[in-house]
Length: 135
Length: 404
Ligand SMILES: Cc1ncc(COP(=O)(O)O)c(C=O)c1O
Image (tube, rainbow over all chains, first blue to last red; front, side, top):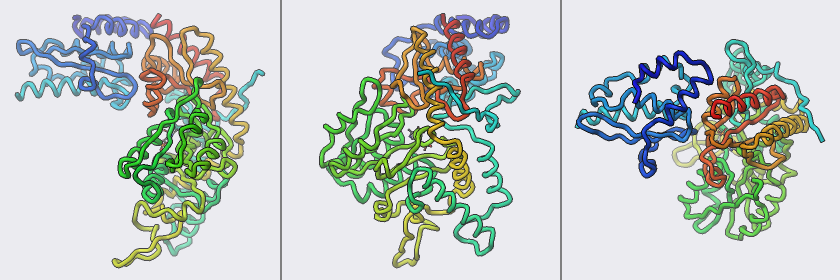
């Protein structure tokens, strides 16, 4: 999986439609989340686009499976995942994920909890990391 | 017949510009309408130079405000063909429906009774009845839709029995725009001895409404979809029904006399307006009725019908678009594009200064029926015009190119 810095470098080069195409492509490249894992339990609250997250852990590193039924949203999900994937829980818990996504200028997509699953997804990922640390 | 949109009222609405002064193509009036300057001015005066409480003060300002508040009640009553003592000011349609479910419902629904709703209802016209049914051991039946998305009144006729005490239906669907034949629905309800509540949220801004001619028992709506402020709405109920309803919320202003031994209540509608009401909002609600009535609902309906026709025609010419709802939808067009989630469409349209709604529109049972998790919805108002439709079409084409 590409690093967030690497993606940003390409993203900053692009304009309008091309940025969306890149997000959609990142979403397509996201590790597949098996259908049976997409349940009410893994569904992130959000009104119009659905987002699912399933956290796993390997050798003290967090690994997330995630998906969305909206393609641009899924691209943003991929950005979040690339920020946190396969890192230790301590690192994820301390990370400011929203700030890391700021250069992508997705403010509208990241601002509303009610319609957007993304802010809830970020919160969920970090709560999970905190819980692992506490356990 | 070719129809053209004829009302040109954009200039009355300061909200229709982006922060940098570009036109904002606001196509979400079914969620909430933008406010004309006349309403903003009425609210500003009521909140400023005219401000005082109602029903209490001995001083002139309060007496004036009481007159203004009661004039607003008369104005709202007249707007839908009712009498002033038949209008209860509520927080909105949601509270109006909850008021009926708690007050009338407590007194009139018993175990084994049935309530008929339809597949296309807004959650506001579903959940209060589910709560009532749970409290009382009553049952809810769901009237299906016709293929083109209308409430199937033939099916309703077959479903209704003497166990039905209430029929609660939307006058205009907030997703499909389909218009209910309220008169016919009322006739069917009354034939089995049931009352009928009509959720008029989407109808009052787009159709002439006369509750007497419609022969309904309850009519609920919100001011904010009618170009008025948020935080206020109305329940209209036939005078004899309202007079017999027990209080719901207790507090100041709704009482006749309070002692710890026994409290007696004010007559309707005051009995249902506990506490200091939304004074400013009610006055501005009255101003919104004036504004809309001055333009005329026949004209508004024709205006929106022309925009709906134009939008449907443009969408139909794109072969990968599904349009939901009947041809003669009132002011609302819901659609889906193959392979593009409405949320993604809404995101890209937003960049084009086009605001649509993407989601389940608080009508999840209807989404299940349509077999989609969400739809994209464009809805129109007095200020909408053909440039808004053109901007929508351009935005859809751009989205399709991005996804292509
Ligand atoms: C058909 C319908 N019923 C009820 C409501 C609820 O209205 P409010 O949220 O203003 O109480 C709405 C609006 O969202 C609606 O469109």
